[in-house]
Length: 117
Picture 1: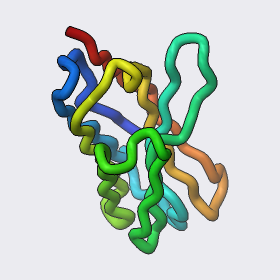
Picture 2 (picture 1 turned 45 degrees about the vertical axis):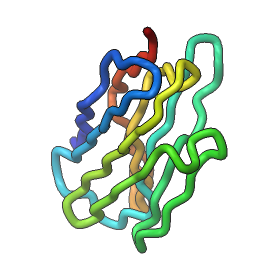
Picture 3 (picture 1 turned 90 degrees about the vertical axis):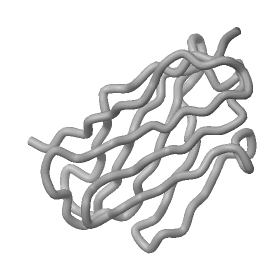
């Protein structure tokens, strides 16, 4: 059973940076999109950034210019570099991989990011 293992979360001051990493425990075939979602307390899970298997990135408006996504389809890894972090970025961040093959969706266990002085 394939698992997505995340790392890199933590506590950071406003204006600081963090890099989240996600790696698949086994090879995932047919990767279409790799991405990061987040969920803040009392809010719905939202897409933060995604990258297609062809390397085309997409970002939520709230993080454009501050976050950068890196994906390696062959290795099954996806990283999120987060700069100029703000308190509004505080959430649990989840790694996601969408495949063209069953079971189609893979999720990480989530990693907490807290931005606070």
